[in-house]
Amino acid sequence: MLALYFPAISCSGNKHLLVSLRARKDIQAEKMKQQSKSGGGGASMQRSESMRLQERKVKDLMVDKKRLVEVPYTASLADTMNTLVANRVLAVPVAAPPGQWIGAGGSMIVESDKQTGVVRKHYIGMVTMLDIVAHIAGEDHLDFGGGGVEMTNDLHERMSVSVSSIIGHSFEGLSLWTLNPYTSLLDCMEVFSKGVHRAMVPVDSQMESGWSPGGGVELVESASGYQMLTQLDVVRFLRDHTSDELQAILARSVQDLGADTEQIYAITDRTILLDAIKCLKSAMLNAVPIVQSSDDVIADDLRQLINGRFRKLLGTFSATDLRGCYINTLKSWFGISALEFTQHISASPLFAAPESPISWKELVTCHLESPLSEVIDKAVTKHVHRVWVVDQQCLLVGVVSLTDVIRVIRLALISPPSSHQ
Image (cartoon, rainbow, N blue to C red):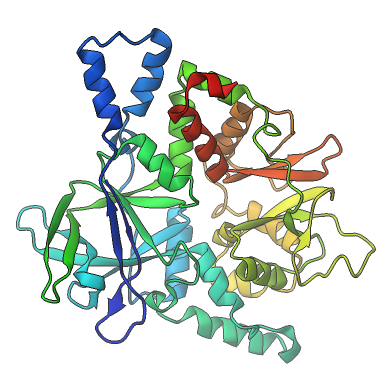
């Protein structure tokens, strides 16, 4: 079972809307399992591995997952960013006291006491680094024309607002996804193949429904606790549980899978950090490649995204890079180039995952002829959400994201083996 929630509307006037959409889990895998037990022809050894993968549930991916990291709705944006930094996470759900936020038909995701069932908190939305980037960029209020003091004061004011006031700056912040622990892996992959990056998984879900006073259906998901499942978790699980039937799709080149693209949004090595942040906000992108600048002033508008195709790849600028520094440090770096910024934060102990530190000089790339299995291994090993596709001269020609990987593998799992060739 899966559910999509949009941020709640506060009884005190918050303008966000909470809508709940639910879909019953796919029972096809269970039917196939029963048919196999009844001796309907017998499954081959090649199919048995794939069947086992198809029968996997979300709960199988949650082993050893930590408890959810969250922030209260009254937390400042600066405190929220520091929480992201301290816990090495890219997004946090926002929790509010029960009874203060309502949604369409009274729908909600709540945490309740396991023994008494009393509701302790209500999750009203998700805040990601892209939400923070969008808020920092604002409406061009941050500008060097007024001097450093004005810029610093403006940033301080922006980061002092409550986190609940910025929910919805990005699509991901505008929605809360939950996945029941018994949702099939295929259904989970369908959600993530559409660009959803993470979902909350209840530890012990209790789904309730009834009739609200207004006559609509009231949907409530209650649990004593939640965990977070991400796209990277799914890809890592798939890598570690590869079936024989997937070997054909994993051996195909990224060019066969359509990674060679004509338009690749990018910034140059001369784009300053503030303008790079505004570029992410304007296009609602989580990351862009940093490419070598040219002598063509018209083609290289340093304040706008450019087409980076066939430009030399130098680095990556991501909204998550902002985890690499606390807000006081960020203030002093707005005037440097985005490339120089990535060099600074890559050396920060706040940035790199301790099990897989990545040097700023190390570009996570592949070639058009690289197999999908190589891309998956690099993404998981280096803890990145996209792998840039380059030619032999390191000129940018495409990109493969985790969304692409999950979509391709899911299609392979539900398609006849003959279609994988």
